[in-house]
Amino acid sequence: MAELRARDVSELSDAQRQARARLIAELERYAAAGRFPHNHCVPGHRVPVFVDGHGTRCAVAHLIESTGHAALVARVAASRNLGWIHEIAADAELRRWLDECGISAAEAGRIQPSYCFSTKAEACFCNGQDDAVGVIEATYLAEGAEYTFTARVDAVHGGVNAKVGDEIVVTEYGELDSDSMLIVVGWGDESYDSPSAVRADGTVDPGCYYKVPPLRKEDAIDAVLSGDCVAHLGELHRKWSQSICRSNGCDCAQDDNPDPFSVALLATLVGWRTMRRRRDRKRRNGVEGKPGPG
Image (tube, rainbow, N blue to C red; front, side, top):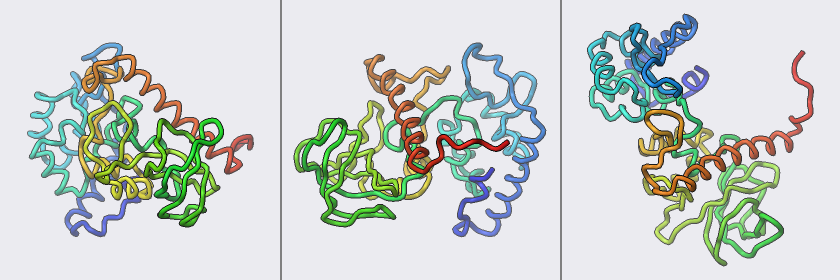
C-alpha cells in the first residue's frame, strides 16, 4: 500500500489517476476483510491461486472484478489459475486493464504475493540494494585483503563519498582481470561492494545462471539509484520480474541451467548475501544492538 501511494503518477492521465486511487482504496478494503484464497491445488507448496474452489478471489482478481471485468477473471482462472502475475501479464486484455487503471505489471506482481524469495532481478543483480546511495564506475586495479580489491573511480552517480581519480577498496568479488571496467554500489559510509563487470559492448554481466535480457550499464545504474531496483528492472523487461521458482512450488527453477546443484547454491547465496548486506548496513548505521520499542 505504501509503495502504491508513494509512486510518482504525474505521467498518468486524470482518468488513470482516478482509477488508480479507486483501486488502492479497494485493495485496502480487501486486505482489511481478510478473505484470501486457499491452496487446495498443490498440497505442500506455496503457490498463487487466482480463484480458489470456494470462489474466493486473490487480490488482483478481486481488483479486476471490482471494475466490472468478471469475464476476464473467469478466463484467467480457467487458463492460468496458478500463474504468477508476471507470467500472465502478457495477456493483451489484462495489459489493457492495467494501463486503464494506471497500474504497472510490476506493481500488480507486488500486490500478488511472490510465494518465493526471489525474482530474476534480485537473484541476478539487485540483491538488497534498495538502501544504496549511489553508484561508481571504476577500473579494477589489484587484489587486496581477503574478499577485497582496489579500484580507480572513473565516474560517480548519486551521493557516494568518492570522486573521480580516487582509489577505493571494494568488498565481495569474483574473478576479475586487471583493468576490468565495472560498476560498484556505494552506501554513503565509504563502503563499496556489489561490483558488476561491464562488457566491451556496454552491457553488465549479471553473474547468474538464469536467462535474463541484456542489461545496459546506464540501465543498471538507474536501477540502483531508483530506490527499487527490482521494480525498475521489471519495468525494463518483464523477464526480470519472473520468479526463479518452479511454477508448482518454491523450489528454484532449473529450466535455464542443467546443473541443479549450481542453481540451488546460487539461490542460497542470494538469500545469504542479501541478509548480510542488510545486517552490515544496520551495524554501520548503529541500528543493531539498540532496544526495540516497549
